[in-house]
Image (cartoon, rainbow, N blue to C red; front, side, top):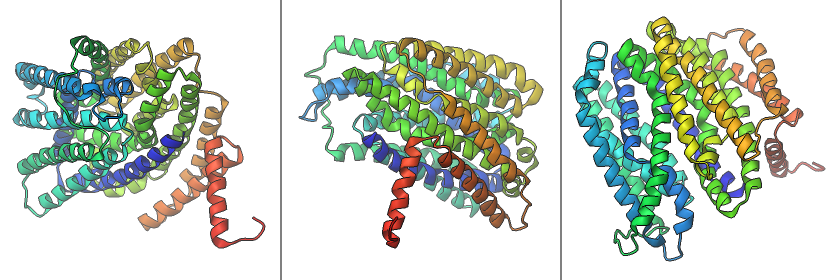
Length: 500
């Protein structure tokens, strides 16, 4: 766990800093200075661009991580590995762009009634998607090289800082809304270029686009694996984002804005998982190569528990502070839809509670089954959204997310248990949930202080202390208790307490 812990620490720092910046943008600035329709448009553009990009990736992110250990060489050319990445990336980009242009009419017809503003920006999605694709490929290469921190900085911090700057320009009328959208696309371009420079100057990979070592049979192997990951990754993304797409089509951009806001608030729960998975996936790939299943099982169990511990704390923290959240998001379309958070947050807790199940499946010999599970996610998500959005609007989409995430993760949990005899869940997860409930009760009934900032600090501190003490006292996680001892000893050493 040494490499994982070191990289995860850097990833966590930047991820949480990104959460703070995202909070400023999504909770404070966008609701205050943009209409809910404008914010909804930006979120819809991002959602569609990610699907567009991943459709063109032909499974490259997982393919890079899966195959790189077998191509890695001391000369840093890695047997022409980049040639395969280049060929597949260009093929996917061309195919995805052609498909996007051919489907223009049916896509615009679906949005013209409730989200006409989206239609006006249809072609702007092409450059946004192209550089989203490029960044995603480069991020996968960085993961394979065990250099994940800078890409996390760019994605979580850099992009959000530049977004904040753009919002400031918009507030002071340096940019109008149209030029803000153009600016938003350009900062995504910049992010991809900066990550490219980092990989070039890292010295771990020499950019040689010659095809001397290129073999078509190897390309076929890449494409076979990548095709299943294309199906897997694209269906999973659509399954996870179909809610935004269907809300935009069925009820309009304003509810897209409210749903996206609460989804962002809930996505803070994902931060520990994202920080850990960025580096864990490469370790898992190497462990499969070496046949070290016990190492994978250890990562599986520990990641599941750690993620649930932090996830539950964040979930109850948001709920006990919802009145403080309303202070910042004063628009009724946001306040009236807080129920979205309850269900979206629950869906994400379900997703993180089973640890790195997708990462394990896609790096195993049963990687093809991941596509099957993601197709189920997509089908369940579409059906649930189709039934629930007309009844409950954005809250219905959040309910659909809970249903689809539970189905998706339950099937993968059963599969890994049967095929690899690995089981991440035990009584400790139940203890975490009980501790979360016990910690939530006093936090919910604490008296409200008029000063919002003092109220947030005192309410959150009391709940965190109760939660943390119970987690340590009941020795729920050996990793966390070990960290507590290390930090306690550091404090005692600094203070030079005798007989510590």
